[in-house]
Image (cartoon, rainbow, N blue to C red; front, side, top):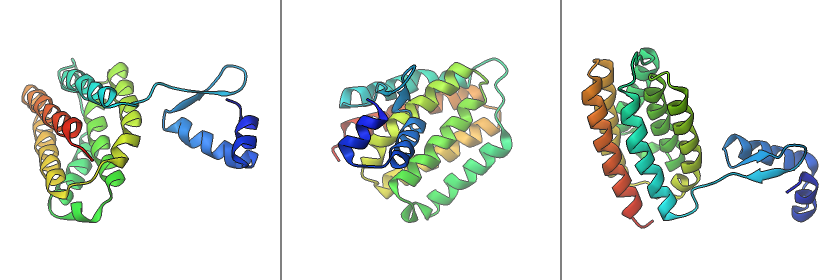
Amino acid sequence: MTERGLMRRYNLSGSEISDILRRISLEGWIEPNPGYGWRFLPALTSAKSYADSYRFRQLVEPAALLEPGYRVDRGELLAQRSEQQALVDGRIHQVSGPELFDHNSHLHETIIAGSNNEFFIESIARINKLRRLIEYRKTLVPGRAAIRCAEHVRLADLVLGGHLKDASRFLASHLRTVGTEKTTRQD
């Protein structure tokens, strides 16, 4: 697809199309073709691909905690832990589904970043970008979300305490539970 073709099809200006393409490119849904034009990247377009993303995360995220030399940014994780605790303490009722997704994915990405393994870091960031569109459409159930945020607090405590094997096991269990919950629930 080309920008000119999109301008004609949707009756938008060049700057409007450029802004839209830039945004969805940042979301990881499209990329520029060599030369000119854009192409859509693989996306989570089915219940199966969404479930596959959770199975992938169940393999990669716990393994990241066991990487040699794992070292988390303590200040960042403490800030994420504090945010998760605030959600547990009632802020969950004041955030939208997209805001909650952003808080939760940032916590997971902060933990994965401690692995210093670029493949883990980039793959989880990519999966989160792909999940974002589906997650935004999911109904926020505050009670269930508060339980998951409490699990995030526990996970952060394990990582901050240096209990990486326990954190890895806990994270695997957390992702299994969330994956089952989100892929079997009808919204």
